[in-house]
Image (cartoon, rainbow, N blue to C red):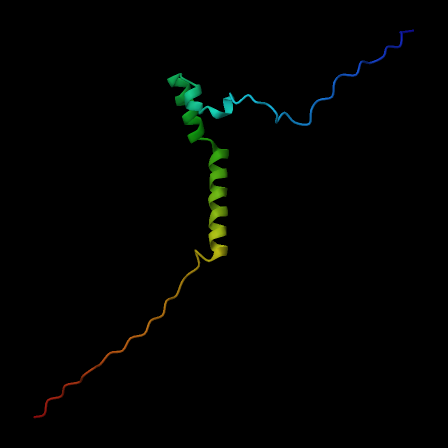
Length: 95
């Protein structure tokens, strides 16, 4: 029969790591500056340009922006009215 072992309790993980003072982060570097290989940059560019999911998401964003403009009245047809006064003269010749 195996011996009963007690599990060692590890230290609890903190709720967040917001107290970190390290500001050097890869997220702050632009990806074009991070990658220096021209071929890799070209592949990434073509992948981003032809990414169907990205293109669909950009169209969804444009649709949502147009919906907001429509709701605010920016895309509704507008009618303008004006008034003016004019004089019309009829000339007649007597023979």
